Amino acid sequence: MADGKLVAAGKPFAFTGMNFTDFMLGMSIRRDLNRESVAAAVARIKEWKVRMVRIPLNLGLIQPAEGVFPGNPRWEEIYKRHKLKTDFFRNLEYFISLAGDHGIYSVLEIHGVPKDPYRYFLGGTPADRAASKPGKAIAWLYSEGDKPTTFIDMRNPRECRALEETFRFLARHFRGDSNILGFEVPYNEPHDAYMSIPANYNRITGRIIRLIQAEDPDRLTFSMPPAWGHDNATWPATFLPPEGLSGGGPHFYVGNGPVPLRADSKQSREPWLCRDVELTFDYALPAVLFPYSGIGYPVFNGEGGEHGHRSFLPRLTPEEAASLMIEANLVQCYAAGLCGAVQWTMWSEKVFRQFEKVYAEQYSRFGDIYAAGPVDWSRAEAAIIQNPAAVPINNGYNFSCIPFVRLMLDLHLGGRLRYLTDDQIIHSGLTNVSAGLEQVSDAAMDSCYKALIVDRRNLDSRVEQALKKIKTPVLWVDDASRLTAEEFAAFLRENAIPVDTKSPADIQIVEGPEHLILYRRRGESSAATVYPLLQRKGIFSLAGEDGATVFTGDAEKLHNVGFKADVPKWRSRIYRIAATDPE
Picture (tube, helix red, strand yellow):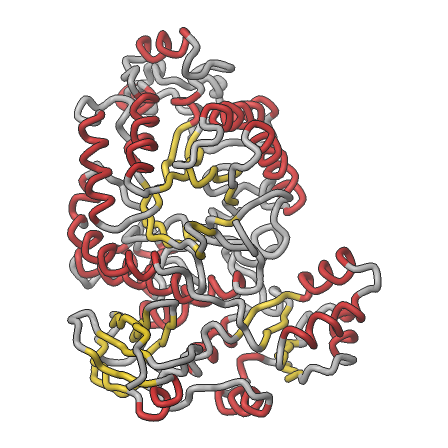
């Protein structure tokens, strides 16, 4: 870590990633999952240019009885009693070691707990449930009369202690292991009312971080926010995470964004995934990711992929739907400046094998792009300031920022705008500097940004009064949905912030350290001329995926003359940027 970024080999580190689910869904019981299958999986993951693997674990497979962990003779006895494979933990160690040898980092997370006596992968028989027979699985956190579940209840002291002791063991066992990027805390997708209270979430998560760091002081930790992992509106999930946290790993699926449901959603088993398709590809992922642009720590999307494709894109073949969804996830996570995009790949399951070729193609296309480093949003020239509840928060999402995100996309301002909340400004002003909010605003805003765009709706009055006194130009907005692209562009240009109104608004333009991505987020497939405004100096060339050079010159020439590109709807075109010696 350096300056709020992941760093490897002296430069910002970014990655494509996948969830390797074998250690949650099979390695404990399936005979075909073993050291040989692990070695084959790692070889394939390496071939696809994946650099990070998230490993979901059931707490009961690490701690099968209270206080019993690998190395304790009772651990193997319990595994044998439940007819589980005693080489489970050795295979986990082998996977982490072998993946590390191939330059692939692992992140460990707790994805379930032993509270279901019929759970197959913990030694249970699902048919026994229907037959009203006693369950046989490892389920020591289950109490008679409880509803069987895999979710943890942090109000229960025994379950809290079980989670903490499991992390303590893992931190101690893997102390100093450089193959592990970090641990995800507190556990997968908190969503109950108790953990949705910010004070509870930060207190409990902070306690787990401290006990991990007590065992392994240099170990990184990544947060899993409330609201099923997709909270992007509250302060623990954005600008004020638990103390000691290294980064974030929320979950944003393409099909479940801040857009309206379709009329057919009531007929679906997954109505929350029946979102308006056009609007989803237009702005949904950029909108959920924009609130992370103003925080000071690295974030990766911990789950994405083709999940929900039947509900979201029912008219397409599964392969076509999966390809569009995976590509959109990889493009938008990169465009938003995230350090990684991790797909929910159920590795040895039939559902994954159906899409294996799709994943192979998309990972291979985007692996080098992420490996070159994340998009740099630290050079933002203007900031949006808003109360995240300027319009009501829904499904854990910040809906207030959507009008600004749509303008940002239409005017090709990615990387030039940053999102700040009024709570964020108050926290920085009233806790970090004794001089107070007004002085902080003068010093910070005037030195950091050329212009501010401020939404008055529900804005904290202290922030509004402070911003009225600063020297930085402010565009005050009473209804963000009525702000036009022309008005927004005129204000930015008045304050020396470049705006691209020449390139088609339908095509998103993303500049990374070594690549330029064009993505058609709406409109029909057709050839068009784009005029990117790149933030780089010197002479460079752009070469497409076929190796053909489409442009040579400097940034000014590129914006003046542009180049023609044929970008299909909801698809991307990738160009490599290479410095070129002047003639």
